[in-house]
Image 1 (spheres, one colour):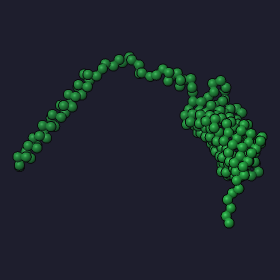
Image 2 (image 1 turned 90 degrees about the vertical axis):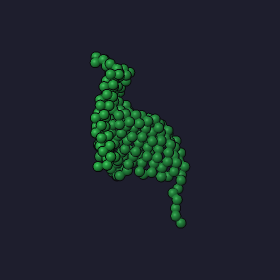
Image 3 (image 1 turned 180 degrees about the horizontal axis):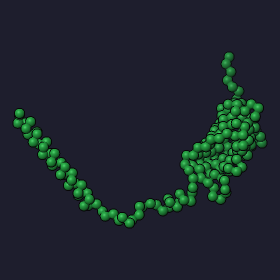
Image 4 (image 1 turned 135 degrees about the vertical axis):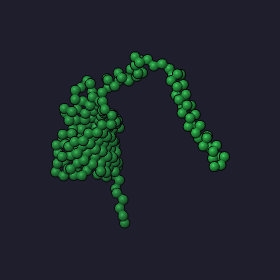
Amino acid sequence: MRAGDNLYSVLVAWMKIILPLVALGLLSTVFLISRKVDPGGTIPVSQVDIEQRADEQGVTNPSFAGVATGGEQITFKADRVRPDLDHEGRLMADRVRAELRLNGGTVVNITSDRGESDQFEYSARLDGDVHITTTTGYDIRTDVLTAEFDTLRAEAPGRVTGSGPAGTLEAGRMLLTSEEEDGTAHLLFTDGVKLVYSPADTKD
């Protein structure tokens, strides 16, 4: 056997003894210099956070789905939902997203900054940059939208702006309903309707 191989074997044998001793020494040092822990002490938790969670009950990222009396499918999502402690049966929501699938195939998507729902009245109110889009080509914005889920009726009682298949429009009021006969969405604009007609491009 060569002298180099013999030296290597001896070095490996010593390292097997030295390294565990060094590790044991480091571990002992950690326990010696660590600060004392009071077993009776409490875990530091923010008292403000505890009180806030106790007062503001709610859930984050909830998702609900159901079917209206006419068979229309309704999906509701939000960033956060919490109960209104002053009104039984009322829920408050942040960053609302709703989808209505009508029997005729039309899909209505609605988003808003805030919303509240009355579980006893089967109604909801959305406010704060309400955005309504439909697969039939409408893109509408308003400040407030009220809805009744049992009959699938939605109304914007104030100014609405946006566009549709015929062009850009503005009105003082809007009503969204679903007709039972064909299941399609019908939008009715009233109170000072202004429409800028934009005919579709035609090919020669």
